[in-house]
Figure 1 (tube, rainbow, N blue to C red):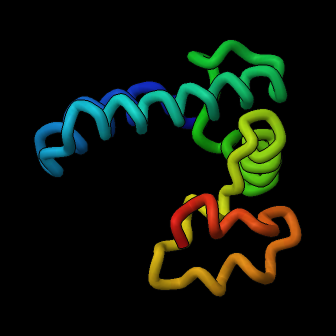
Figure 2 (cartoon, rainbow, N blue to C red):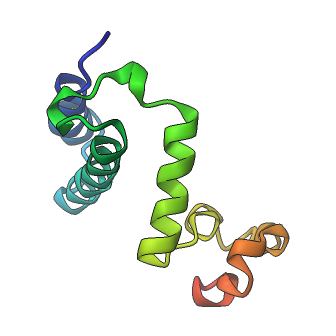
Length: 105
């Protein structure tokens, strides 16, 4: 099994900051998103976040996490992904009905 914490540290501190020159706000936003994911995974897997292994973050866990975010945060994931140039992509998502107008799409 592969410990994920060192990879996340590298991604946030080195890759985003140094190689991609991402702004501090962008790095903070990414860190918060990963914190939400790892807290969710921690509860679901009954492990402390620091013990989560890369192989445990699978498609079903991510799907459950995205549904959790939609319900608890009121965020439609499809609306976050869609750009203003593709507002018709939201029309097929029953969970995101009417969201396009609130996203500026």
